[in-house]
Amino acid sequence: MKTRHFLSLFDLTPAELQRVLQRASELKAIRQRGEHYAPFPGKVLGMIFEKASTRTRVSFEAGMAQLGGSSIFLSPRDTQLGRGEPIEDTARVVSRMVDLVMIRTFAHATIQRFAEYSTAPVINGLTDYNHPCQLLADLQTFIEEFGEIRGRTVAWIGDGNNMCNSYLKAAIQCDFQLRIAVPPGYEPDEALLKQATDRVVLLRDPLTAAKGADLVTTDVWASMGKEEQQDRRERDFTGYQVTAEIMAQARPGAIFLHCLPAHRGEEVSAEVIDGPQSRVWDQAENRLHAQKALMEFLLLGGQT
Ligand code: CP
Ligand code: NVA
Image (cartoon, rainbow, N blue to C red; front, side, top):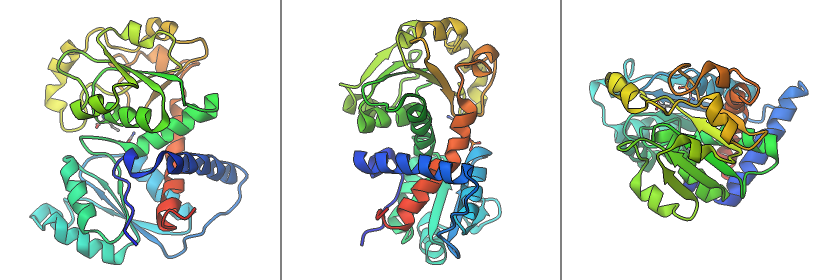
């Protein structure tokens, strides 16, 4: 049987994605009831981090422990990857020893090459191109709030980055309308924009994008690896902060999400992220449940 990977939301069918999201909420309820559910004793997750992380690392490590397995944290600094061992060789070796691999890399091509040579399922823990695990948590959070996301409207405000690309894929997979407000020069992936033409509107004005939206979301202006552009980006993103004024354009009862870490006073005001419409802490917690559901799906070969 061909190894299933999760490098993108497109690696699950829409039906499989719905199943994983539903399972995420079931696993959340199991944990909230204090029940022990550990179906994977002896299973090992290898985690390769080329970039920093709080949520991704903790949620995968805690999630695997809760499922009865364990995980190994690997950074290029302490492995032979940092000394030039080819990714293809690393993939062949590591995947013979562990049951699942999670990778956070800069270039998306790196994870694609790893997956090509890996006999174990590979999970994308963020690349410069996308961040599908975060979208599992975002979609779960939205569904918990509103029941379903199909036919709803989401406003993305800020940088057309890896998170924005993942929202484009989510709009296609889950059939919602996406309004993207980005400054010129910060558009998301062109091919994805083309693919999502019937689901996406590209705008410049954040107020217009937020009008009537059920969800307003954003992310940092300078993603990991782009820190040296911080000053230029602060200038270019003037007017793109998600403020109470922008939230007031959204539908009453709309929610605010942010994958975190956040910069209060840059992409979002403290009033919004710490306000009553913000669901960012539930969203962060849902990383745990959604990824447990994903790992279960991949370990059972999609048979859940
Ligand atoms: N949202 C997210 O992926 O956070 P970390 O960078 O802390 O993992
Ligand atoms: N766009 C951000 C997301 C962090 C979770 C980054 O890539 O740094």
